[in-house]
Image (tube, rainbow, N blue to C red):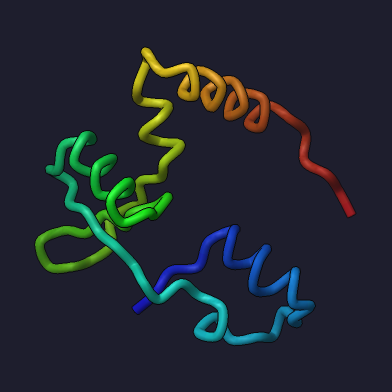
Length: 102
């Protein structure tokens, strides 16, 4: 059907000034692309590059969502990549940062 991401919320909800009561169907990404749990990471990376998508839904043989793989997941998995090193550092920093309270 669709997927809603932090980018959808920022670009389609916050930037447009929509209210929290807005139905998800109005702001979700409809062009969902998938890979499968047994696909090689290189295949997912190629698919992201070719389709110009930063996330792929991971679907089982029945088409059920079992996860999501993101471009940052791919970069973090590549131990040789400079971008992967930066993403690993940012992820560690964000995981250990205290959350803001209203």
